[in-house]
Length: 295
Figure 1 (cartoon, helix red, strand yellow):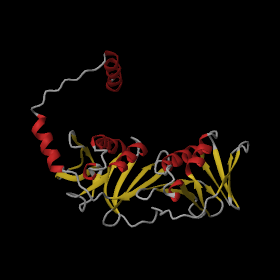
Figure 2 (cartoon, one colour):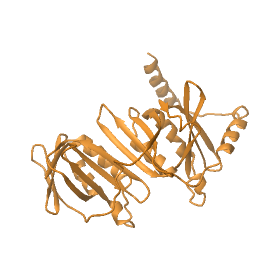
Figure 3 (cartoon, one colour):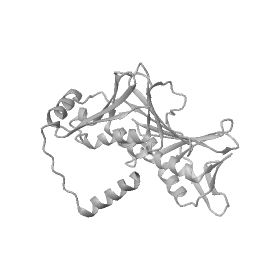
Figure 4 (cartoon, helix red, strand yellow):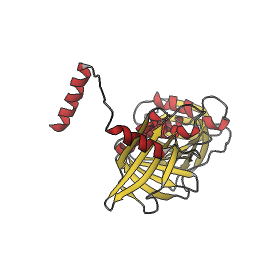
């Protein structure tokens, strides 16, 4: 049983998978990646789960047979990282996975772990809320830098994302966060937003937003979905690269003081005197970059 994949796509998928892998050893299942190949769909699905958040990549490839294996995520990522560009073939043999480069010059054997409970995202029931470009989502996700890191303030360890429609033609996604001292409210246009989502919101755990900031690229397309009462799925795709990534987690029960954040920003917006100090070299470099886009 074997499957052949692009090394570039496999590396990106494993890099994302490792983002939720547990290195502490407290959760045995969280160190493993669930790797399932489907011959009929001609793809390989890689899923990891840390008890709260799951991340899943679906990779197109040459799949000869169905197979399912659980492998140490970090070890597999290190092996793939050391391999040259080109095709990589995964071959399941007894209790081992053989990893081979396209030219056959590099081969690695990796022991298969015991079966563990890792929930897959594919096939989940979901309701679309909004679609947004990768660059705009990254803009919103930067609000996480204002969220609290103090575990004693769970409501502030979140990013509140609301879907608003100020007029008939405009759909705006608003991200709000605060640590109790500083606050931010970031706005970005959505590509589309369903009627059911307008006026509603999701409270993302700050850790999940930080994960999105790492996994989403500016040229990606993102769809935010509800899946049940308190679960959400964020689908990330890219037609140029073939990226097909999904992240799922549970909504935070603690909601940040969104109205207070808005009032604080509104009351200080026209009153604050701001002084910015910038090194000359850094300013010149920034102006050069801006100039390149203008020209």
